[in-house]
Length: 217
Image (cartoon, rainbow, N blue to C red; front, side, top):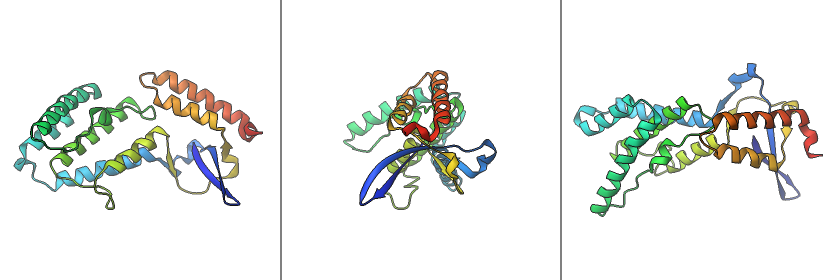
Protein backbone atom coordinates (compact mmCIF):
# COMPACT_ATOMS: atom_id res chain seq x y z
CA UNK A 1 0.00 0.00 0.00
CA UNK A 2 1.53 3.33 -1.00
CA UNK A 3 0.59 6.92 -0.20
CA UNK A 4 1.30 9.66 -2.71
CA UNK A 5 0.48 13.35 -3.18
CA UNK A 6 -0.69 15.21 -6.26
CA UNK A 7 0.22 18.87 -6.73
CA UNK A 8 -2.70 20.74 -8.32
CA UNK A 9 -2.43 24.55 -8.32
CA UNK A 10 -0.29 24.44 -5.22
CA UNK A 11 -2.69 22.17 -3.31
CA UNK A 12 -1.86 18.67 -2.11
CA UNK A 13 -4.28 15.78 -2.01
CA UNK A 14 -3.55 12.50 -0.26
CA UNK A 15 -4.14 9.37 -2.31
CA UNK A 16 -3.57 5.71 -1.55
CA UNK A 17 -2.92 2.96 -4.04
CA UNK A 18 -2.31 -0.77 -4.04
CA UNK A 19 0.21 -2.09 -6.58
CA UNK A 20 -0.29 -5.61 -7.93
CA UNK A 21 3.02 -7.39 -8.53
CA UNK A 22 2.99 -10.78 -10.32
CA UNK A 23 4.65 -13.65 -8.44
CA UNK A 24 7.04 -14.19 -11.35
CA UNK A 25 8.19 -10.57 -10.94
CA UNK A 26 9.33 -11.02 -7.32
CA UNK A 27 12.95 -10.19 -8.21
CA UNK A 28 11.94 -6.60 -8.95
CA UNK A 29 11.19 -5.68 -5.35
CA UNK A 30 12.43 -6.17 -1.81
CA UNK A 31 10.64 -5.81 1.52
CA UNK A 32 11.93 -2.49 2.91
CA UNK A 33 12.05 -3.57 6.57
CA UNK A 34 13.93 -6.77 5.73
CA UNK A 35 16.35 -4.79 3.55
CA UNK A 36 17.15 -2.40 6.43
CA UNK A 37 17.48 -5.30 8.89
CA UNK A 38 19.93 -7.10 6.59
CA UNK A 39 22.07 -3.94 6.40
CA UNK A 40 22.10 -3.66 10.20
CA UNK A 41 23.03 -7.36 10.53
CA UNK A 42 25.82 -6.95 7.98
CA UNK A 43 27.27 -3.99 9.89
CA UNK A 44 27.09 -5.90 13.19
CA UNK A 45 28.95 -8.87 11.69
CA UNK A 46 31.62 -6.55 10.25
CA UNK A 47 32.18 -4.98 13.68
CA UNK A 48 32.35 -8.36 15.43
CA UNK A 49 34.83 -9.69 12.86
CA UNK A 50 37.14 -6.72 13.43
CA UNK A 51 37.35 -6.83 17.22
CA UNK A 52 39.06 -9.29 19.54
CA UNK A 53 36.19 -10.57 21.66
CA UNK A 54 38.62 -12.45 23.92
CA UNK A 55 39.70 -9.09 25.30
CA UNK A 56 36.10 -8.23 26.24
CA UNK A 57 34.76 -11.53 27.64
CA UNK A 58 31.54 -10.00 29.01
CA UNK A 59 30.53 -8.91 25.52
CA UNK A 60 31.60 -12.25 24.07
CA UNK A 61 29.47 -14.11 26.61
CA UNK A 62 26.39 -11.96 25.94
CA UNK A 63 26.66 -12.42 22.17
CA UNK A 64 27.05 -16.16 22.70
CA UNK A 65 23.90 -16.25 24.82
CA UNK A 66 21.95 -14.55 22.03
CA UNK A 67 23.27 -16.98 19.43
CA UNK A 68 22.26 -19.96 21.56
CA UNK A 69 18.82 -18.77 22.70
CA UNK A 70 16.02 -21.09 21.51
CA UNK A 71 13.05 -18.79 20.90
CA UNK A 72 11.82 -15.22 21.12
CA UNK A 73 10.13 -15.73 24.51
CA UNK A 74 13.37 -16.93 26.06
CA UNK A 75 15.23 -14.02 24.47
CA UNK A 76 12.59 -11.61 25.82
CA UNK A 77 13.06 -12.91 29.37
CA UNK A 78 16.83 -12.48 29.13
CA UNK A 79 16.50 -8.94 27.80
CA UNK A 80 13.98 -7.95 30.50
CA UNK A 81 16.28 -9.15 33.29
CA UNK A 82 19.24 -7.36 31.74
CA UNK A 83 17.16 -4.19 31.19
CA UNK A 84 16.17 -4.00 34.88
CA UNK A 85 19.78 -4.54 35.91
CA UNK A 86 21.00 -1.74 33.62
CA UNK A 87 18.28 0.66 34.74
CA UNK A 88 19.24 0.08 38.38
CA UNK A 89 22.94 0.44 37.61
CA UNK A 90 22.45 3.70 35.69
CA UNK A 91 20.27 5.10 38.45
CA UNK A 92 22.78 4.24 41.18
CA UNK A 93 25.59 5.81 39.17
CA UNK A 94 23.42 8.82 38.26
CA UNK A 95 24.09 7.95 34.64
CA UNK A 96 21.37 8.98 32.15
CA UNK A 97 22.51 6.49 29.52
CA UNK A 98 19.73 5.47 27.16
CA UNK A 99 18.72 1.81 27.38
CA UNK A 100 16.43 0.40 24.68
CA UNK A 101 13.25 -1.02 26.21
CA UNK A 102 12.76 -4.81 25.86
CA UNK A 103 9.53 -4.48 23.87
CA UNK A 104 11.36 -2.45 21.24
CA UNK A 105 13.65 -5.41 20.60
CA UNK A 106 11.19 -8.30 20.82
CA UNK A 107 8.17 -6.67 19.19
CA UNK A 108 6.59 -9.03 16.68
CA UNK A 109 5.30 -7.73 13.34
CA UNK A 110 2.46 -9.42 11.48
CA UNK A 111 4.38 -8.91 8.22
CA UNK A 112 7.05 -11.34 9.48
CA UNK A 113 6.83 -15.02 10.31
CA UNK A 114 7.53 -16.20 13.86
CA UNK A 115 11.03 -17.27 12.85
CA UNK A 116 11.70 -13.95 11.10
CA UNK A 117 10.55 -12.01 14.18
CA UNK A 118 12.92 -14.13 16.28
CA UNK A 119 15.88 -13.45 13.98
CA UNK A 120 15.02 -9.73 13.92
CA UNK A 121 15.00 -9.65 17.73
CA UNK A 122 18.40 -11.36 17.90
CA UNK A 123 19.91 -8.80 15.53
CA UNK A 124 18.56 -5.89 17.59
CA UNK A 125 19.73 -7.51 20.84
CA UNK A 126 23.27 -7.76 19.44
CA UNK A 127 23.10 -4.16 18.26
CA UNK A 128 22.15 -3.03 21.78
CA UNK A 129 25.11 -4.89 23.30
CA UNK A 130 27.58 -3.35 20.85
CA UNK A 131 26.08 0.13 21.34
CA UNK A 132 26.25 -0.02 25.14
CA UNK A 133 29.90 -1.06 24.96
CA UNK A 134 30.76 1.68 22.45
CA UNK A 135 31.75 -0.89 19.85
CA UNK A 136 29.39 0.40 17.18
CA UNK A 137 28.27 3.92 16.39
CA UNK A 138 25.57 5.17 14.06
CA UNK A 139 25.12 2.94 11.01
CA UNK A 140 23.91 5.99 9.07
CA UNK A 141 26.78 8.43 8.63
CA UNK A 142 24.55 11.51 8.95
CA UNK A 143 23.03 10.45 12.30
CA UNK A 144 24.53 10.50 15.81
CA UNK A 145 22.83 7.21 16.78
CA UNK A 146 20.62 4.45 15.38
CA UNK A 147 17.29 5.68 16.76
CA UNK A 148 16.00 7.05 13.47
CA UNK A 149 17.18 4.02 11.50
CA UNK A 150 15.34 1.63 13.84
CA UNK A 151 12.23 3.83 13.75
CA UNK A 152 12.30 3.75 9.94
CA UNK A 153 12.66 -0.02 9.95
CA UNK A 154 9.73 -0.40 12.37
CA UNK A 155 7.53 1.85 10.25
CA UNK A 156 8.50 -0.13 7.14
CA UNK A 157 7.43 -3.40 8.81
CA UNK A 158 4.21 -1.83 10.11
CA UNK A 159 3.20 -0.53 6.69
CA UNK A 160 4.42 -3.59 4.74
CA UNK A 161 6.54 -1.19 2.71
CA UNK A 162 8.43 -2.53 -0.29
CA UNK A 163 11.16 -1.12 -2.53
CA UNK A 164 10.34 -1.71 -6.20
CA UNK A 165 12.85 -1.60 -9.05
CA UNK A 166 11.56 -0.90 -12.54
CA UNK A 167 8.39 0.44 -14.12
CA UNK A 168 4.86 -0.04 -12.79
CA UNK A 169 2.15 -0.33 -15.43
CA UNK A 170 -1.13 1.53 -14.99
CA UNK A 171 -3.04 -1.76 -14.89
CA UNK A 172 -1.10 -2.79 -11.78
CA UNK A 173 -2.34 0.21 -9.76
CA UNK A 174 -5.60 0.20 -7.80
CA UNK A 175 -6.79 3.28 -5.93
CA UNK A 176 -7.69 2.51 -2.33
CA UNK A 177 -10.04 4.56 -0.11
CA UNK A 178 -8.54 6.02 3.05
CA UNK A 179 -10.99 3.99 5.17
CA UNK A 180 -9.65 0.70 3.78
CA UNK A 181 -6.08 1.81 4.49
CA UNK A 182 -7.08 2.58 8.09
CA UNK A 183 -8.47 -0.96 8.43
CA UNK A 184 -5.13 -2.38 7.24
CA UNK A 185 -3.32 -0.18 9.77
CA UNK A 186 -5.51 -1.48 12.61
CA UNK A 187 -4.98 -5.09 11.53
CA UNK A 188 -1.20 -4.66 11.53
CA UNK A 189 -1.30 -3.57 15.16
CA UNK A 190 -3.05 -6.78 16.28
CA UNK A 191 -0.72 -9.34 17.84
CA UNK A 192 -1.08 -13.05 18.66
CA UNK A 193 -3.84 -13.58 16.06
CA UNK A 194 -1.75 -13.94 12.90
CA UNK A 195 -3.99 -16.48 11.14
CA UNK A 196 -7.15 -14.45 11.70
CA UNK A 197 -5.43 -11.20 10.63
CA UNK A 198 -4.06 -12.77 7.45
CA UNK A 199 -7.52 -14.11 6.58
CA UNK A 200 -9.11 -10.66 6.93
CA UNK A 201 -6.27 -9.03 4.96
CA UNK A 202 -6.70 -11.59 2.17
CA UNK A 203 -10.43 -10.85 2.00
CA UNK A 204 -9.75 -7.10 1.81
CA UNK A 205 -7.20 -7.56 -0.98
CA UNK A 206 -9.60 -9.84 -2.85
CA UNK A 207 -12.30 -7.16 -2.49
CA UNK A 208 -9.96 -4.44 -3.81
CA UNK A 209 -8.93 -6.60 -6.77
CA UNK A 210 -12.56 -7.07 -7.80
CA UNK A 211 -13.56 -3.46 -7.37
CA UNK A 212 -10.40 -1.93 -8.82
CA UNK A 213 -10.42 1.74 -9.68
CA UNK A 214 -14.22 1.86 -9.60
CA UNK A 215 -14.03 1.82 -5.80
CA UNK A 216 -13.74 5.58 -5.60
CA UNK A 217 -16.42 6.39 -8.19
